[in-house]
Image (cartoon, rainbow, N blue to C red; front, side, top):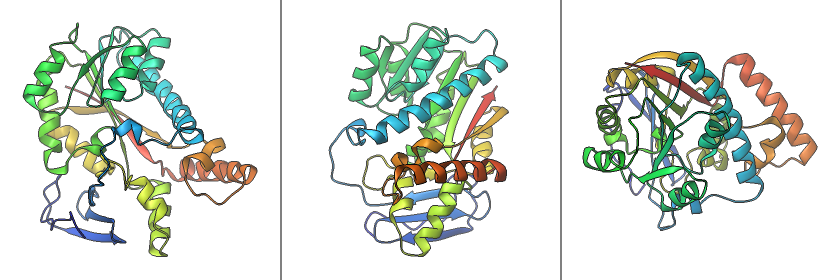
Length: 300
């Protein structure tokens, strides 16, 4: 497969016990037998589109907005439990601003956003947010971006961001971010996890030759795709490498029961049946503790 490389060690824990799994010609996933971390490799698509121009509009984007808004409310609730006087929040990789809208509606201020996407920065600025371009998590880029933020961040959030980072540079990038935020009191990170019911179901379908669900989860065909799927162990290990300790964890579903049909492309079910299936999957995932994503709250 073009673009794939032979991996010797896990990018998180350094273990050399890696298992490779190929999904057609487009995707290969390396899983660490030690910490459960997954790294995906694929050929980069030729598209020169901004990341946010690659989203599907309509029902898919509406479903995504609904999910992110629900998750944002839960995250802000937990933030206020951990830091009752929460303020000075920096959203790293703020995207379309779903999280910042909830923060503003809940009275959390001041707020600032950094992102690599010109489309995202324009959308965020139109909403009245303080913004700065951050092309990469590197010392010089971080210094330039944070120099344009009008306050010292006490809270930083990376929601649905870390999974997109280049594997070999992920730890160094996050270490650089931590060092650039000496006033940090709480870091919030949300990532997809491989133990999730949707991921496990997609793996099962892939074994039957049905590639599309697994390729959708890894965002094959977009840039940047999902390069990481974490486990609780690998995420905790990465947080510890930043000199932080996990003070709370919050599992999340990556779909609403009523919008499963819109969220999962190609689901061959009419609306009522898709909703029924969505409630069933949500109940099963919750009962088994097989949520699709994990939010960790970490402090110095």
